[in-house]
Amino acid sequence: MQVLNEINLRHKRGDIFGGVTAAVIALPMALAFGVASGAGAESGLYGAILVGLFAALFGGSPTLISEPTGPMTVVFTAVIAKLIASDPVNGMAMAFTVVIMAGLFQILFGVMKLGKYVTLMPYTVVSGFMSGIGIILIILQIGPLLGQPSPSGGVIAVIENLPTLLSGIQANETILAILTLAILFLIPKSLKQYLPPPLVALVVCTLISVVFLSSTDIRRIGEIPTGLPDLQLPVFSPEQWQVMLIDAIVLGMLGCIDALLTSVIADSITRKRHNSDKELVGQGIGNIMSGLFGGLPGAGATMGTVVSIQAGARTALSGLIRAGILLIVILWAADLTSVIPLAVLAGIALKVGIDIIDWSFLKRAHLISGKGALITYGVILLTVFVDLIAAVGIGLFVANVMTITKLSELQENDVKAVTDPDNTDLDLSSREKEILRDAKGKILLLYLRGTMIFGSSRAITRKNSQIGGCHTLVVDITDVKHLGVSAALALEESILEMINAGRSVYIVTTKEQALERLGKLDVLKYIPEENIIMGRQAALERISTKQLERLHTNYDENVSVASV
Image (cartoon, rainbow, N blue to C red; front, side, top):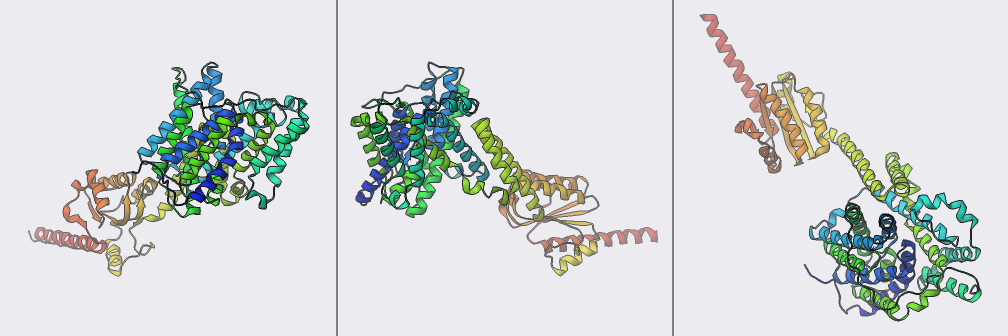
């Protein structure tokens, strides 16, 4: 595997424009997410630089722009609040340690080549989780929008303190926030191509606050430390290590999903194909470095990626240029950000929250599937009011149970038990029908097709009830593409029930995988080799021949007894 991402000078003009454009967009977003998380504006900038730099260097998607995102910020905000509440002295350092651990998990996922599986989650769960995160981000901005600090304790605390927040509203800051939102929503599309709305809102509203509201008491970012960030050594707590581990897994998984989904979007625009596993390694390295230097966790950012590509970016050089420009801001221009009002950043963060909500699906969810809509709305409520981890876990459990149930219902049609050839939709030849009619229900043909996984085992078990009055079982698995363990065990039960009753079993198949699976279960040792036949009609012919031989043998014995 190539160590570095695709970096070359063949598209240097487009990469330069793309990197500059992405940096312009990243600056206000990084400041907003840094403040919203509670770690500080500088943490947002550090995260934007470090995650973006190392993901661009070592990732597997040449045009992906990585930085702090809304979902990652919301999860990290909850991590900070939880750990500071348990350990006020070391809580923030422990939170950055969680970011490092999340990066390690991402590298592990990449090394284990799990990239192609990360995004295999039900859309109803993903949509509900992302929409819930968007709602959380919106609610957490209510305090700053009203000119006051956001109450500690998350969403519930904000809702409980809403009357107090409303009674203490700071008009000047609220006006700035409203003006910010107005610019973000109303800026003409023709201008969006050249002037990113977040940057326009940041500059315009900051200038208004400096020129017209300088004499009023407006909460601002304040001074951001210039120069390179200090190294943050990992801090662990024996009491909180389990919490930190789970939070790291959730943060790492969310970052993987965010990055890979954005990589797919980038692929659709550039007509290239990213390397999922390599991208996870790059994201992991970026988050480790960000956590080591007190930066926010990050992932692939859709807005920055799309705008960068539209500006001409085609290789990871654009991501390196973007990181370099932000580094210049940290080293020499950080003082310029000190006058930015917090209300303006809250307005930008609120707009991000609105954009994260999956409005398109939510409006149609109940029309597409009632059960799917129930999962989506349930995950939203759990995400907002209970716990992010519980929301995903319960959502996945319910969605998978519903999927298994649906698979079982669908695979019921792929499992057929035939004793009467005139009462089945199975395509039988005239000779096969003749043999089954002559058997008068003594032969049970168990026909399976398609992919027999765990959902089909119940259908096979239900067909077992028809074995009772049969003398011979024919298991036709010729059309089975894959025989799963659960389905194989269900077949084993049917076969052994017949064998233990002293009855005959025939297996019809041409598939090595199915026979190999049954062989590993030691089922084939109970079945004579001549009873494993390639061809259903051939199997039925052999059964018919043996029955005739048995009848002749019984007849000869009866004649001998009578003559005696």
